[in-house]
Length: 171
Image (tube, helix red, strand yellow):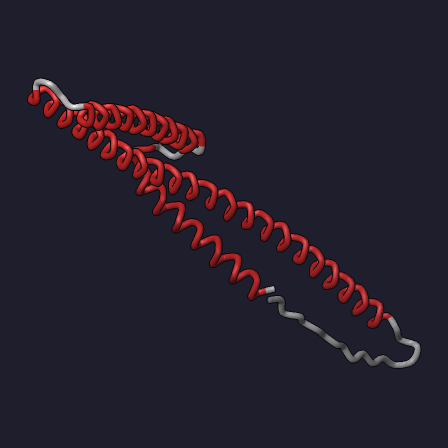
């Protein structure tokens, strides 16, 4: 939202004495040049602020990605442990039976395959967490200070956005 400022001047002079008009014209020309300079500077500042907002959003996105991957790793760990417990329970039941039935053997084989799948998923999620952590390190966000960094980035984003809105209102 830009404010348009218009000015008009009524200039009168005596016939034959135009020296004052030349001075006024020079001043008006100077004011016009300053206005153009201000406009140019403001567009540069707006571009810089937009870049700051993009940088902050990228860092916040990396933090969110890391947190999402970490939650996924927790879930994969729980699923893997459950699959391992189920397989161990079925193996113990087979051993207790002495001579396991084909159904027991088949169920145990399915449980063992589930353990393999859960373990592979856990490892893949671990790799994703390591990649997300590397992205944080590359962005200069220490993992031990992730909550503080996120709060600082959010505050910086809010301040930059407010400055942009004020600037838009002042133009």
